[in-house]
Image (cartoon, rainbow over all chains, first blue to last red; front, side):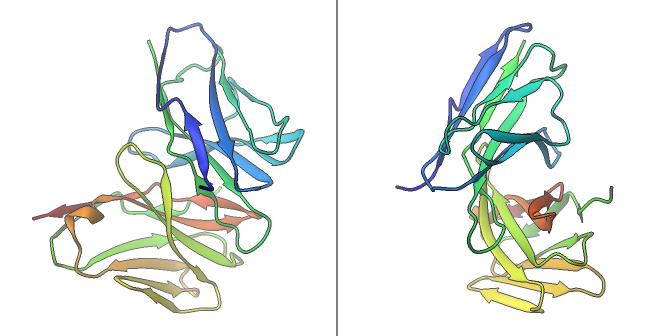
Length: 113
Length: 109
């Protein structure tokens, strides 16, 4: 099955710890994205990557870091510098042919206490 | 910058039609999209419309586009309880997508 996966579905951490969220896709898409979703709010772009070994900050990159060493993988690290890390995190990917639509993973709910 | 705007809530009775509205910002957007998000899940692409079209129908879904007013709507005919979800419209901005805040559709039996 082609798709985009995120793991784990639920993640719990103590304040002050860094945590890495996984995102993998086997759609052969070049572009990948990380969004944050808070209750009652839309999606806010954290980081995106148009190609391997390159990525750019989105609207709310502070306190987050990413890497893109492989086309299939775009992990997101939530660092202890992120002031309000508890949220639902969504990863998406986009191909270069056709339209501009992004395809989303199932999301990871991170709770930091 | 300007936002893609949607009303936050809509409640309908099962069997009625639902109309979810969206105002977008970029008149040069070539594609406009509707996504559905069920509780605790990712976004699922529902449908899209090219900017040179006024209407697109796909089974129970009808998308209407008014380019002059930059207004997009999604009509769901014969709404079912399984249609309860958050619906996001999105426009293309610099080759990437800008999303509205989402409309939470509640379908009452």
